[in-house]
Length: 459
Ligand code: NDP
Image (cartoon, rainbow, N blue to C red):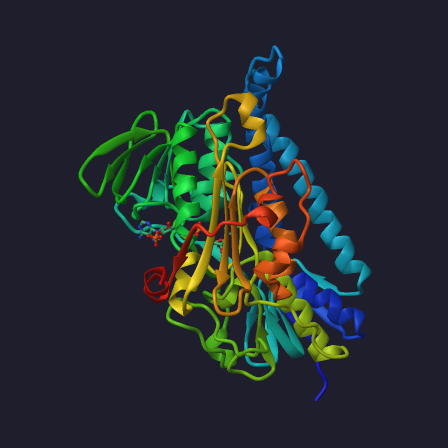
């Protein structure tokens, strides 16, 4: 049986593009369909523009901090439309770069929605196309709330295109997107309410980091509304009237729902092609990214496993190598470092204290200090750094940091952790002075023991 293509990739985001490009490099005849924008969420309405907005917000703090260093600076007016225009220009440049890259790799590109007709046939913008193998890389979409008035909320997709900076914005959620945008809007001068249903933001992160971030949010003047959610929202002349779960109300200009994302699989023809999904719509895959239909694979957020751009890229690359190349490149996916670009940012890799403690006794090394910059800037901002060491093997199984440059520092540290470094390896390493990072190799005194009833009350 001959097909139009050896491989058809549905979705031109980070994972899909990498898979297509590597497969084409191995000699496969490849097509990719993208219905919205090349580069997907990360490039267009995710990581990349988000980080540009984070950078824009950081200047406000830097200007104020500079006064402590002798500068006679005044914080001027911020021009939101100018920032958005500059961001759009850069994103358009990246879009074109993606197109060129795919074209250069010899991939056939369809600017159209692709829907599965059966296991080897697709409808691509009204045209029938067949392929031997198919990769689904359609990613995710922001989850919209379902309380009364929910259609009056914006989601992260919209936040990148606001015509003006709201005077007051209320953000619902305590995850990655909520805390990142809280820092962006507060830094740019908006009044921010952050409403989440836990005691602390970032459920699932290490508790010391969560507490440190909570303090940083308060120090930034963010109105933290914890252990509550939104019950209803109505429109007012100036914006929105938000009623919270405890009955209290607040008037705001915009309500931003950052309540997670879900796999984008609706109306994709998965049933017709015999591809199984979980109850939340995510595609079920095995360790080799194969779906329940042996010639169809899925990578990235559409599988709802580790929803991070570099993971989707690793999966796409590895799959293309396995299907068309010399065999898969192996990535360490059990200790993937991740960052939250809050203010200040967070970098984290490996186990939290609670996770390590559940596995057995763990030695905890914790440092919390005012970083050098803020001894003069006068800004109330602490850095938190933490190492989690498995007591039996003395391997460092987790590293966490809240503070300036944390994501940059944790990237390097994640190599050591993935290589199985022990606490003694860290202790043998000479620090770089004066940096915050050197703290990770100079932590000598154990702060506490966790797990196995705190190692039988530390004997
Ligand atoms: P997250 O899963 O990180 O957080 C979702 C938040 O919404 C949680 O605080 C959750 O509360 C809350 N929530 C969920 N449902 C409700 C509800 N019904 N009522 C009130 N609150 C609710 O999702 P995000 O939207 O922040 O981000 C989506 C994903 O995108 C991330 O998980 C991550 O994979 C990815 N991402 C990664 C980034 C990075 O790497 N820097 C940046 C941005 C996104 P609770 O904790 O109580 O469940």
